[in-house]
Image (cartoon, rainbow, N blue to C red; front, side, top):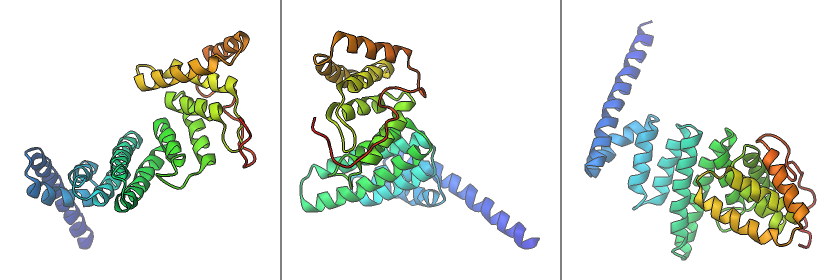
Length: 258
């Protein structure tokens, strides 16, 4: 009984100390007192504080991207899906900037950091967060970022698209625009997905411009009847319901001629 009491007292002591350290660390970080910030934030991050871990990631992102990615991963593991995705985007951007240096050391470093980004996206994707599903799918189709896996990529795009995620719908439009191993090029399906992406894009200017541009290119190769049918399908479609191409399995391994 005494041992349990002592253990509980120690836990409470360390917890209160970590909270105090976090507050001081955050304050020091914002006043640019880096030495104090790192000293106070590190223990809090080691105890699982996502805020402390993310700030450490931000601090190290300039001087040591591998250490920064390590702390970002700690932050992601102690956060919910939306934050995991946001951290993944931050890590992915850092890795991309490093890869642009175009030397062997930078490419090797970027490869390590891209894997951390993938882990962050995967945590959120596994929880069903659509933006992370699409982002992870795009990583699987970027061979200069990580080992490519088209089947996983398309599966993730579909999971995001089923939820009405505009980026996932747009990615499916690209899949059918060009074809993939086991998936034939299909301009009708491509156009349908781009129209769905436009419907669910909201105020996302990047999606609106990209999908509108490609949709405009595709529609010149479709008949009026095909375009009308695609638009009618999209008007009637709701997330979670079937849409042409949304549930088609990937078969074979050879990419058919486009």
